[in-house]
Length: 266
Image 1 (spheres, rainbow, N blue to C red):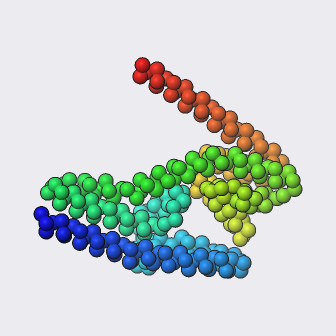
Image 2: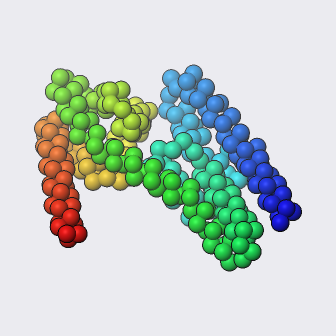
Image 3: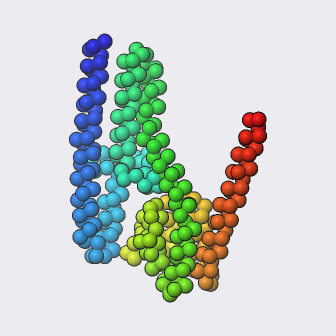
C-alpha cells in the first residue's frame, strides 16, 4: 500500500512538472512576447495584423504539438472554436494536454483506490472531460452576459450615429465604453474593419463567434441595410425594441413555468 501511494505521488509530480515545463511556461513566454509585439508595432498596417492574427491562432506554443494539432483539424477546430467563444485565454494544446493529464490522474486514482482497471478507466473518462465542461460553462456564462449587454451596445451605436459618427466609429465607441464581453468582441470587429477586412466578412465572423440570436439579428440587419439602403440608426432602434420585447416574453414564460412547477409540487 505504501509503495502504491509513493508511486502515485511520483507519477502525479512527474505529470504536473512536465505539463508546467513543456506547456505552461512556453505559452506564458509566447504570450508575453506577443503582447510586446502588439503593443509596439500595430501601426505598421494590414500585413502585421494578419501576422499577429496567425500567431494568436496557433494551437500550441510547442512546435511539434502545434503541427500535430494542425494536421488533426477535425479534433482541434471544435476545441479552438469553444476556446474562442468561452473567452478563456488558453490554447487548444493546453486544453488537450489538460484533458490527458486529468485522464491519467483519474486512471491512477481509480485503479489504485479500488484495484479495478474498469473503474479507473471510467474515472479517467469523467476527469478527462473536466476542461471541456469548464469551457462550455464559461461559454454559457459569457454568452448570457453578452446577450444582457447587447441592447445597451446597440443603443449607444444609434446615439453615436445620430450624433454624426460613422458606423465603424460607433463600433469603436462600444468597444471603449462597455465592459466585457461586449468590448472585446466589438473591438475585434472594429479592428478587422480598420485593417482592411471587408465589413460583410467581419460581420459574418462576428455572428459565428457569438452564437446568440440577437447578434445574428444584428448582422442580418446591417448587411441588409447595406444592400437595400435606409437609415441604419432606425433599423438598430427597431432591433433594440425587438430584443427587449423578446427578453420580456422570455421572462414572462419563465415566471409562468416556475409558477406551474411550484403548483405541481403542492
